[in-house]
Image 1: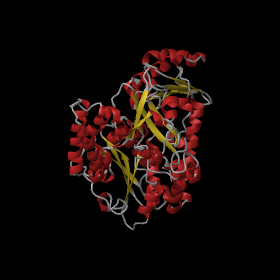
Image 2: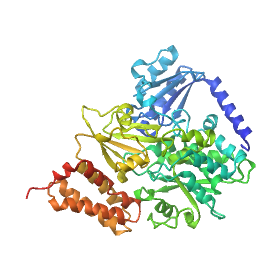
Image 3: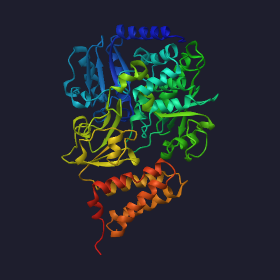
Length: 539
């Protein structure tokens, strides 16, 4: 049992000493993307090779989380015994196991599989949320502790009052990374001020945007980081119970989180009277059925309560009436993953990164027509051009860039003329899109933007809970209207009707799903109007 900072640091030193004297390391990516490419089989092949050559004592094989460059999986890194040198390999298969172990024995890298870590994909990143990913074993709590894990929680309990914690989060300028961008410290402060014997902390892991996998990667690769952030939030706000709401389509994330909760509880890091304090905190995973509307706070809470995931009107806000009618803090995975570094390094440190209104970093999933599909973390204010062409490697197959879709079905499409836009909450909103949770879908010049808008509108139509008429009927009618433009059967009045209906759905819908569903249509009309006009038939 760990009951103090001294206990925690002693365990960290013990683990680091074991790793230092033990052996070199082969770190095999075991994220969902690399697992689909056979990383489990690769790990077994490497273990067989190591064992057959009697190298068990000199080389340890370790599963790690997503390294980011998913396009070039399976990814493997080799670290020397003193961990001073690391060699990164890409596109490794089971057939490469023998050659890879040969390279370890003779000290000569496997040249044809080496990954250039000096390329912008790696050098342009600044990792805060992802700092442990690709390094620690997500199934080993001691590995997390050896890399500074849970030290922020114990320092908060030992050295800071709840008010001090909230003040540091406010100073940091951290805004919710789930899409809305509401200041995290102010949200926590609102709940802390409410007098109630029961309060709750909820982590939203119901990542539903097409093309988004940021939260999934963090849950799979560094689950203890999320638990630590939630526990610190519980201490700051006076809550003793937390829930992580994860879609059932993320079985690996669910397994990692449940395992992490058991480990942390066994060591006394979660549970009753943590570190001999008056603070108790327990966490439970709840599964969602993959309803996109449950990304909305009140619908998510209804689902946790065992009801249909329908949103309700606000006010009352969650700070007054949340889960089971009690004050509740709800943040997403990435928001909680930022908390431990903020407490460790101070709010001013975090505030110095990014832009004035959008501090810190942002994790993005780069997908679509882009060379380097994968996961990246960059300072707020990085330009779209840097994200797409420097980090992402540009558009493949000789095609040209046409647009980038940000913010999922709630976001919009941004054209080539805005490539030098600095990515932050305000700039994306001004461009007709939103930050969202961080999905970025690159679109090349072979794509029809009306068809892109229709895809997202149909997604919102199918995911609407049906509670309010503007969303239920409006998204259906908008989908049918877009079909007319795609099939070149629209008439001139349909174009004005399309814009008018978008504004009605946007202004009259009950929750964020309906209120933002027209964004892909409105943004493509704004920047690609000619493609709509081309769908109007000649009378």
